[in-house]
Length: 306
Image 1 (cartoon, helix red, strand yellow):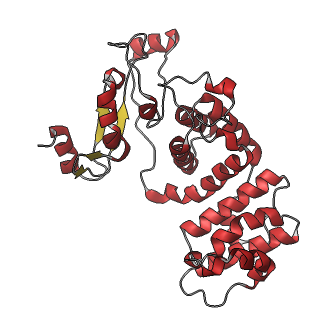
Image 2 (image 1 turned 180 degrees about the horizontal axis):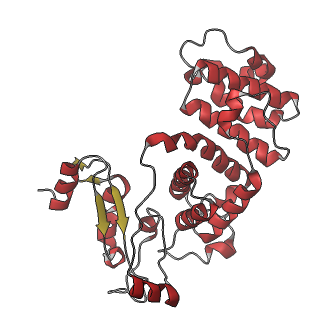
Image 3 (image 1 turned 60 degrees about the horizontal axis):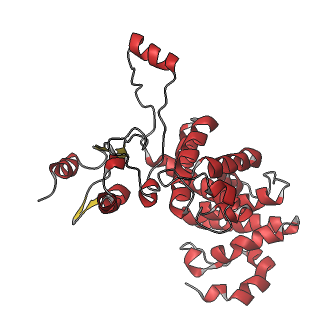
């Protein structure tokens, strides 16, 4: 029989529950391993629960009940937020009460439209700093790897994807760079998070949606890494929400990049856009701008792929 808490989640329906795991670091490694599925996607055995929030709490090993810690795979399934109130904060709380601020976060799905923008920014970062993708890779700076404990947040493919989603959400709700920095560092670790945030602060990129509305009029950044990130964000925006008009505008932008001396950045996204599976229904005639990249298209046999 399923656990009663799982039954409560099912009865509450989508978005109706918050499940809290307390002292999770004290769980044995075998228990933590068994919890990967429930924590990652809400699946408990044969039961797929409706969408709900999942959080966990634990103490650092030196003050935890058993001295336990999170395994590295378990640690990578969370964004880590440290709670370390200083003496003044504690005193204020004792005197004035521990206020719980009502969330002002949007729960609508609109924030997902920001994913295209942030997919491009994160992809551009990885193109510029490929060694930061995973702390287990030999290319990751060894001096930074030594500072990452098993229970600490660290960079890997899963945690970078989670950081991208958090940035899209923070950006949509206009929470600011400080909140974004806390969440990114809590997801991929302080070293990789600070590296990314420094990169982001220097980007100052146009919104890809503005590019798709006016591909010939928007100012293009000057630095190569900025142009690559912008091109990748345009690719993500088109493929995530495709239409004939958006598809044609994307090709106009690629042709402009090539005319203005940025053909290398344009060539990075030509293969993805030129696949048959990327062409929107009702496209009809292939955009004439494709001719600017015909050598690349023919050499790769893109049009024959689905």
